[in-house]
Amino acid sequence: MSRIWHIGLAVPDLERGMAEFGTLFGLTWRPVVVRSMTMTDEHGAAHDVDCHVTFSLGGPFAVELWQALPGTPLATPPGGYFHHVGYWTDDHAAEKQRLADLGYPDFLRSEPGLLIARGPGNVRVEPCDLGRDQPYLRDLYPPDSPYFGTPQLPTN
Image 1 (spheres, rainbow, N blue to C red):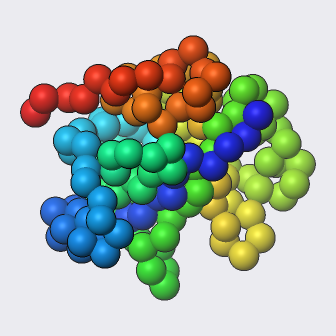
Image 2 (image 1 turned 45 degrees about the horizontal axis):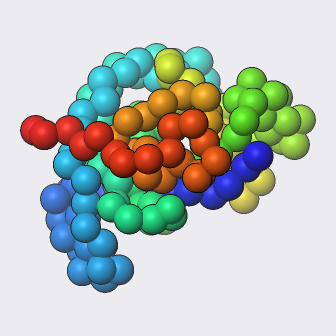
């Protein structure tokens, strides 16, 4: 199974990005969360990051915005904010191999299970594991997923 569920945008100022995209597309936002992780880039270099990120409410298609982190794979891409398309997959390991076979090597990876691959034309994709619960995004899971339901939004 693979279903597009979000687009990821790296913005230079998260609050401003939320205001601008909210006004442009009539979006409201989930609370901003901080994801602390070590990610490995396509050259094997490790980056310890604190990523400030939010997703739009509603859906099932969502917009993901994060504060761009210069010098890391989460920097604003050359030429604009667009970073990747995220889609659901039933078998994350098999999908990683399928992407490699199609000429989409890892662009970044992190535990648990974050992978963004980059292919021709600098297109970046994020296969998202349907077997991994992300409670604050439950409303964005496909209806036949065991994790689909009411999101448990952080209260920070």
